[in-house]
Image (cartoon, rainbow, N blue to C red; front, top):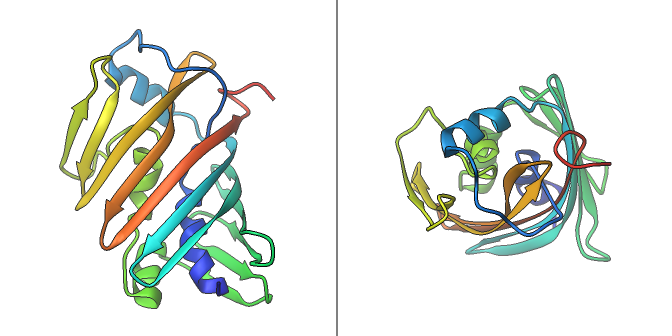
Length: 200
């Protein structure tokens, strides 16, 4: 796995808000109210697992992600012997360092990744999608389950399926999200979020 190819995987992790702990419960407030509360959380740390499958490759591993209003740090670790990747910097200008020490600037992740790999990743929308929210800048179509939780979301040519939920500090967050679009399949399993919603 090359450092640049791993970068595509970790940029996906960059926009996660991971989580863990107890079985899901039925939301006790309208979904719009819940979404607005989560959108206000701007400092957190997340851990989880993810995999990305394209026509030419398949990658999987674990990630750790630290998010602050003006700084991001993401570490990706692949299977033993595959190596890892570190991404850091202000959100508008990230730097990726591969196992070999090569540095790659990701000034505009969506544009840069499409140029390097030949396929696009909707990284600017994933921070909404992986919290169970639509990106308000684009048209979308939600399908909710019998408990009023998002089950499927269609937006920007991508199809999302939410396959589990967990309660953290009174908030309901996705446990696993499957995404398909642009010749890619992405699976994200969200294991932990701290501080804020999850106790340290």
